[in-house]
Image 1 (cartoon, helix red, strand yellow):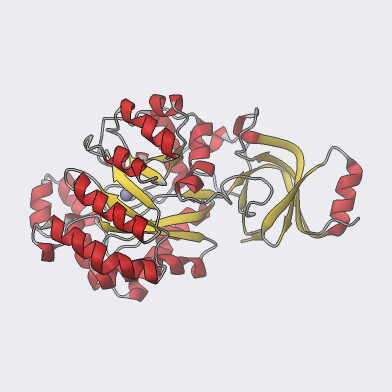
Image 2 (cartoon, protein in one colour; image 1 turned 180 degrees about the horizontal axis):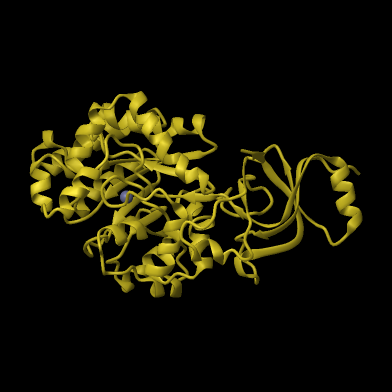
Length: 409
Ligand SMILES: [Zn+2]
């Protein structure tokens, strides 16, 4: 019987990221059989006849030259659609200006909001393509992008639309997240409760109706929104059938992670100040812990996320760039992987799982981030001796080939 095969990938060492006895879920002497963009079989090549039959039936054959094959990276937390940048503030700060002085000059997040509101669709798209392209070059094939620099109806919609359009310009799947509860806009003049009502009543129904977002996120923090305000947004998201994510415990233990996991959050992100005793709630609700070492580095934070306790409770840990103009202008998933190892003591295997299978789980996407049958054929080839090299070396590697949905891009 002839086996249908669009593309056959052989002569590769596969870091499948499946949970198996092997480090990285490694598979040897196997070939990927790809049809319609999906891995339909993983063939055992120890039998030469099988290989010859497959090869004869394949429309296209890829010889991996004994390189390592990994799932395409999933960067599950970014804010890469925004107007302007904050290089000038960075410069001012290092010349001695304080945060308050910078804020008074119209800088900080409010400065980004002002620049994003005045940026038209084409300008926002053009700058977002440039940023996302850097991630693609390192093998990111799925990217999450949050809104949250518009804070009004029009700009938030524009940001989410631009984010989704990245798919038309780059070999990417984009998962969008509505983060209206990111900061308090000037027009709400210190009335956070009124702004939360506005988000819930005037923005979220539109976002849901137009299917602009795959999830809803809140910045639950002393300088963000309190747990009552956060819960209102979660309740509304549930009502609208949208999954939730949350920025929690980045600067203080505000108990946002417990609240988010009670609402079956896909993920809780940052979590440097998460208490060990709260981790059981993440484990019980299947919530992924997203570690963002770029922000930790950029803010010179010293409090580390509770990695040992997360391990002890088998909570999946994802690693992402948090690419944003203020606290993590990091256009490199490989650097985030390295930082997660150096700063948070993740093993290279944990960090690479964090940017593949666990990153996908943080987006509720279970069809990717792992090399297995019935998963999308998003993968990369690397000229390395061991996957650990990708975590070990800073700016040392680029994939030699990237496949998105089974197509070489
Ligand atoms: Zn963030």
